[in-house]
Image: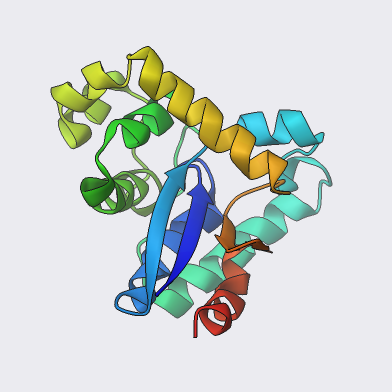
Amino acid sequence: MKKIEFFYDIVSPYSYIAATQMAQFAGKAEVVWRPFLLGGVFKATGNSGPAFTVAAKMPYMFQDLGRLVAHYHIPFAMPAQFPANTVTVQRVLCAASDSERAALTLKLFNAYWGQGKDVTNLELLTELAGAELIAKAQDDAIKNQLKTNTEDAVARGAFGAPTFFVGDDMYFGEDRLFLVAEAVK
């Protein structure tokens, strides 16, 4: 069975949409959920968010997101805190075990993009993830894991989120999931 590495950040709306579609690979590929820090990727690559580089992109992005969430029948509520500093959130995801990371990721994406809640709020994050993971996220090993995930993605060519790797082949954007599906056949 082939492996799909899924690099994402909770702050990315297109990563949210991609995350809701990852179930299509159950039984077809091993999906490895790899939280990274999108801001770190942007800094390392000289990139910036698509909605902040050209004024016309922001209104289009929201129109595009509206079409996508309607197409996939997933909830969407624009978070009041956007963009948000997701360092702690991403560390919490790194602190989760491999077996619980996908479910926790979907839970946090739903809270942030599905319900518009500020998942960077420590009280809410603790409610959603649990105090144990919040505490574990402060460990140096977990902090280093987030840094390693980010550096690994950049070293392999990532410049934004979501980014997928099937072997050495990189796919960028939720709109490339059909190509990821072809690659794992």
